[in-house]
Image 1 (cartoon, rainbow over the protein chains, first blue to last red):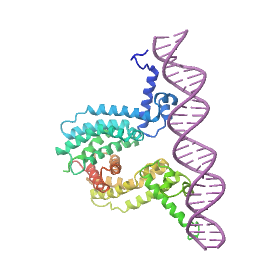
Image 2: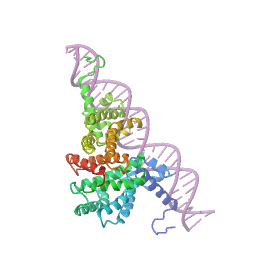
Image 3: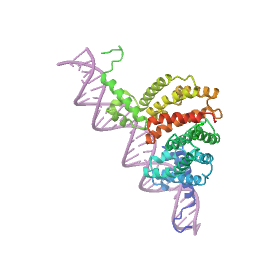
Image 4: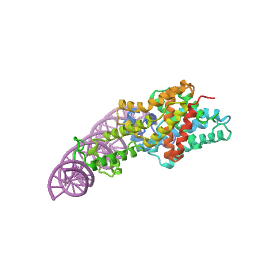
Length: 193
Length: 193
DNA sequence: CTTTTCTCGAACAACGGTGTACGCCTTAAG
DNA sequence: CTTAAGGCGTACACCGTTGTTCGAGAAAAG
C-alpha cells in the first residue's frame, strides 16, 4: 500500500487534511482568532481528528501560511513586470487583489504564531516585487517622487486591505474592486499634473 | 460633602476613574483584546477596584467608546467645510488623522462589544461629514465621479488606517503622515487630467 | 475476509480570562 | 479625631479554548 515507499497515508486521511486546510484558510481569512473547534466543524471533521493531523493550533496556522505563501509566490512570479510601470503596476495589482481578497486576514493570524523572523521572510517575497516596481516607476518619471517609497508601499497595502473590507461590507463587488483598486492606486502614485 | 446633592463621590475615586479610562484608551488603541488585568495595572489600580467603577469589561469599553466619540465629534465639528472642496478635505483630513493616530484600534475593540446598531450610530457622525464633503466635491467637479462614493470613503478610511500602521511600524513619523495622508487622498480623489 | 489505519465522541486536565465575595487597610471628609 | 467611603489582595466559581487519552467502530488496503 505504500506507493511512495515511505509513509503510506490512507486516502480519506489525505482528503481530510485537504478539507481542514481549506476550511482553515476560509475561516482564518475573516477571523484570525477562530477556534480549532469551528475549523474542524467547518471541515466536517471531529476536533480530535484535526489534532491527529496537526499537533497544535499553531502548527495548523503555520501550514495554512505556507500554503498561502506558496500560492502567492506562484501567482505573482508569473506577472510580467516589464514595460510601462503604470501598466505593470496594473497587472501586479490585479493579481495581488485577487490574493488579498481570497486570503485576507490569514497573515494577521500568522503574526500571532510565527516568529518575527519568519514573518519578515514571508512578507519579503511579495513586497520585493512591488518595491522594485515602484522604484523603477519613480526613476522613469512615471510615479511621483515627493513621497517616501515606504509610504507608497503602505498606501498600496492599505487600499488592498480597505478593498477587502469594503467587499466584505457589501459596499462594492469583488469584480468592481479590481478596477477600483487599480485606478485608485495609480492615481495615488501618478505624478501631479 | 455632596456638592451636587445626589451622589457624593470621593476625590480619589474620581481620579481613579480618570486613570482607568486613560489607561484603557491607551491600551485599547493598540490592542483591542487587552485584558482587564493589564488595564488596571497600567492605571495603577487593583483589578477589583476597576470592577468597583465599571461593572464589566464591556461597560468599560463602552465608556471608552463614548469618550472617544465625544472627542471626535467635538474636534470634527469645529472644522470649516466650506470653500474649495480640496482645501476643505485637506483640513478635515488633518483633524481626522490626528484622531485616528490617537485612538487607533478603539473602534475595533468596540465592535466586539457594542451592538451593530450602536456601532452604526457611532460611525454615522464622523462619516456624515466626509460623505457630504465628497459628494459636494463631485458635484462641483473637484473630485472624480467614475468611482462610487462609498468606495472613495473606504479609500479615505483605508489610507488613514494604513498611515496609523506605518507610523507604528516606524516607516514614517506622525508629523510626516499628516502631509502624506492629505496628498495621497487628494491625489486619489482628483479628477484625472 | 483480514488487517491496518483512521475517525470520532466523550471525558479530562490545564490555562487564562471574567466576575464575585470577603476582610483588612488607607484615606478623604466632616 | 471620628466616620464612612474607597482601595486592595486573596480566594473562588465559571466559562471557553487548547491539547490529551481511551475505546469503540468505520473504512481503506491487501
